[in-house]
Image (cartoon, rainbow, N blue to C red; front, side):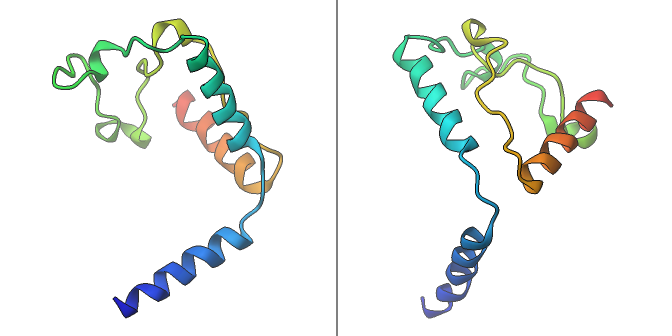
Length: 102
């Protein structure tokens, strides 16, 4: 489709001009290492399809956030992602702190 070139060009420009950070890379490498160590194999019951027993749909809650367990129990408390120092990631981190307190 010829018109697809416009949104694709916009996506390339957005990515090329976005603030750069290696936070995503370090996060995925840490998560992959946890999997290599055999961690994270048991998915919480409320996330298992087709059950979803006890799942809380975040979009039904204020700020589209609800406290619920997403990580497997053996990974609770593990922090894979730490926001980088650029303005975009710091703004996202501040927003995350705000909605978790409300």
